[in-house]
Length: 315
Image (cartoon, rainbow, N blue to C red; front, side, top):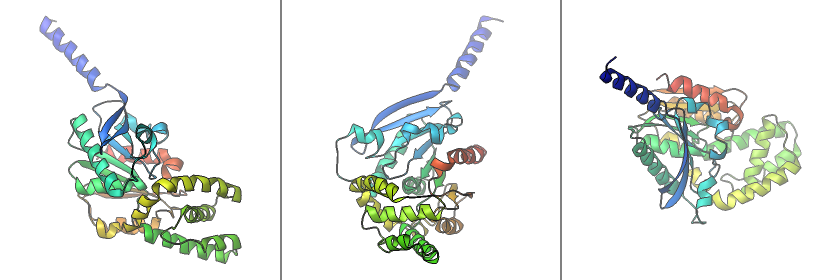
């Protein structure tokens, strides 16, 4: 083997090592005039980029990302972004004016632009969970050439209609079963919610309806959390009642994958199915998760990852 061949051989080995280089890092980036936190993990820096948009609002998952995206890291460079007012981004900044949906959408646009530039890509995959689907649908609709695939988990389709459907269902169920406590509490709930207690009441009886216990003691404990959450997020949460995807996003120009739990009343599974059927997209697939409610990442995180790997990687 001559010197030129040896050099070429060594270069090939080096390129293979670079191609297979893992990435596991964090960064604070300037987004929306403040410092915002992202974590980046993947087995190969050359894998497709996947941006995970967490739920809530306010429920960052970067601190326990291994529970929701560890399998994905073998196939994607997974980016977790702690949104404004959440997780480590909240720790990095002094308390500011309460964010609006429009501010959060602008933040999401800047994160998308940052990732495309940082990794020198033309497209990324976007995965949104619950509240995160509000930002995900925005990116997919506005930047279809930059979003290669959008995965919507428990999407918010029409918050007003969803909650009214859930409230009516629960009223009928607990009236029929003569549960006086449930009926009395549900009678105090207004849609849109007026406060955190009404939100928790609906959540409580959805939980019981789906087969789990929710004691008075649990209610007291959860109420403290819900009140703390609502002091920051209720103004933005109220804006969710303006969403009606059937009218606002009747079509997408990128592939869409929707995952819904057959027990989900929070983002009502019937509404999600009806919207999916009506939506026009170049490619779309719906995946039902059996015996699962709204919290799909917490209950069936492995299933989400299996579906994404099987379908996105085989496009």
